[in-house]
Length: 111
Length: 117
Image (cartoon, rainbow over all chains, first blue to last red; front, side):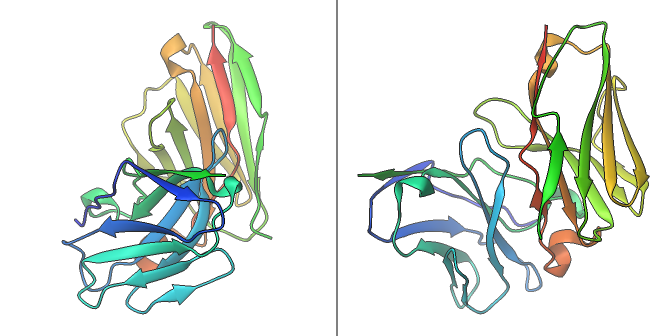
């Protein structure tokens, strides 16, 4: 099963782009990369997901390397409200359909 | 509408009480989930329902009893809990149990904060 590695914490200045990396070197060809975030005391919020191509929506962009071993979530203009724990999830462990969270990256956006 | 609604938002219960957490979605999703999250930890899966039938139980103690009365509702019945069961309980739903394998999105509610005294 693919596992993910994320830095435990990152800082970003307000108004700048936040680039959150995720390594998933054991990913299989048909496994999606999902990103969620959790703002303090709230439920996890879906951000974006992708398979092979780069994806963009109103919240963020997802850049997946050609070999699919890593990806980067980009918040183009970070605001203070983007301060949260960001989770990169590739596949449920154990071969089942579960969404299993790793430790994530705590992003702090500073004024 | 991608809303999963959980009630109550906060619950305080004694160790001998019986209470229930409720979850509702109207997205036509056929898979529903319960997660538990302790402070400063990631969410951990407890149960998965698929088409109103229990599909996955992550070896959760029997003092937690899930119920899916219909495709829109998911309950978590609580009885004889311990203080260490105090946590944020999250409900989620997805189109079906294929979940992230099929590129489906799993949507979460805001959670119910449970304190056991």
